[in-house]
Image (tube, rainbow, N blue to C red; front, top):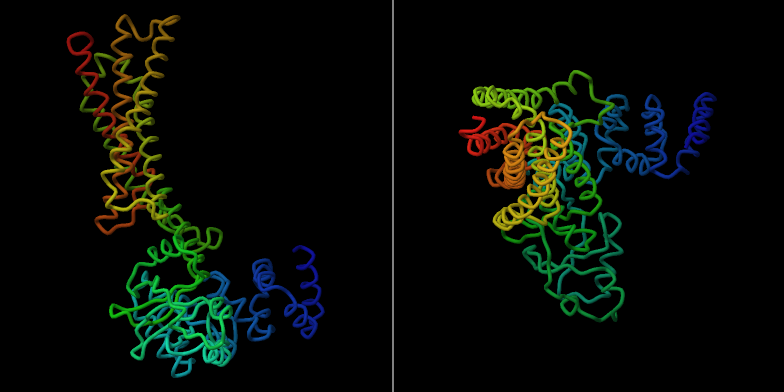
Length: 456
């Protein structure tokens, strides 16, 4: 890559546009995209100088902040050419990110048919499958034979997003089935489409959440899936390249939320510092206020702590163990939900598993905690003559806190999903803060019960 950048820089210095054009047009699309990353100030020139088809293919794989910078610097004529040549799904994705005035100006550059198409796609909700679909696909009738299908394919296949799959519709546009191209190519020319139909159709609804589309693609070996309305009329298709892009964005957003911050809408290094702080400060304030309840809980048990100061020694151990178990459970469940392995309907099965695993984990840590106290009494008097009571208090508290942390961490994502919120917002820091406060209550309640009349 370094050698390629040096070659391009040399051509830019020589101002040899013809040789630069030839060199760029011979590179892979991904290489040109990397060049734009390495030499951002020359990115618009690269797009201007490339052949139109290659310029479009490079532009569509750039991230949005880079696309936006390009739009501000490219000539109006080049922008119009690119927008008109972009696949409808990529065009919709771009329009949905841009400000209203910019979208209005760009839509005016489209042909009448493309303008209607863009406005229709933008009419669907932001996170719906309708925003992902493209209307460029091949449809056939079940009464056609293979010869007619191939003639139709030669005529219209060039404008299709993919020809891997053909879609069978009736005279009203209702989707009947989909057929892979290899099935068409491997049979006799006189074979009817109806003979190839197996009625094992998998389709997305135009109003489905995009997250659901990711799960459907994950569970089925398809390069494209049809999109229908409530009356099963074929409206478009969603291709796997869009799903892979979406899955990457969803994964990135979830990781950022799990870390206790708002999702970043730009690459980390491109985001202005103040905007980055703004994204992080909200959750930090919420978590800070939540942690203040920990001091409140300790204040409630002030008298008990004063009588048995030794209890305060184990507060960090108790709250960290509960928070860690809660964070583990939360992360596991959020990931399982993202992969479609767990749904809201599985809440009781999840709870049963977490009760058992929480108990086992708690017992393990409880035994270790008790053994640690016992070992210290062999060469220290820090825990006093009632070290056994202290050991049992810490051991039982660890069981309770770890069990509670596991339950809270596993149930919160499911509860948020049930309420229509993003499960990822039950991030590890949020669960940890919740379990910190409640863990202290569990710890001191057990301590009062065991040590009543002895130390308390």
